[in-house]
Image 1 (cartoon, rainbow, N blue to C red):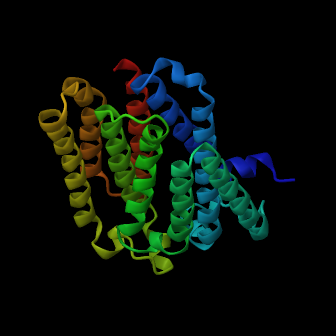
Image 2 (cartoon, rainbow, N blue to C red; image 1 turned 120 degrees about the vertical axis):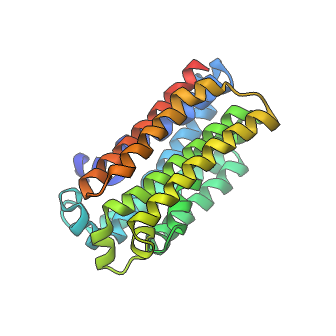
Length: 277
């Protein structure tokens, strides 16, 4: 019997709930109010959550030595749960998520098959390389929102903007987490951006990413379709401006931890903002 508390910690339950909430809000507020009770949406969310849970499990499996330095209080692999149990959980969660995806549609099945493979590859190798690991997680996060359009076809600019938002804020958060975890990553030979470039250059790169997202929203508004720009400024761009100010001043591991948490709050604010469109 797998201890519930250990399972919650291993699979990042709260992050999984955010994924499901994002997909439900996308369907409910950006496509149709009736979709919240559609069984296809439920199947999509369950499938996506299982894939993500499997990804978190295999990530902790491979990162146990690094986590013992960076976050020793959160380690469950090899303590509460055996490595064999974690590996089995990853396989069951991922394969079930892929199977449910194919049950929904071949498109979703292929997307989740690719996501499951990339999450394994990320945990096994990509996260130890500069930027490519961060980019992989960010792409998969943005895809979780965009995949709603694969179930309910019909391109909507707002869904694309929110997918880009999820991509950029996740990319920024992953890089900030690398700053927070620099000591453990460096000990075991990881080559993350803060290790390869240094903290100062990595901060400049984050600023550039946030400017690029803001510019993308403006371009979509001007060239593709009108967007409620003032709304996006208030709910998305202003919080990211606060993030920049905080990041400029940050120089300790604790600072980067709170920046990572604030990035998650920005993501939640973005999701809830869908209700006001």
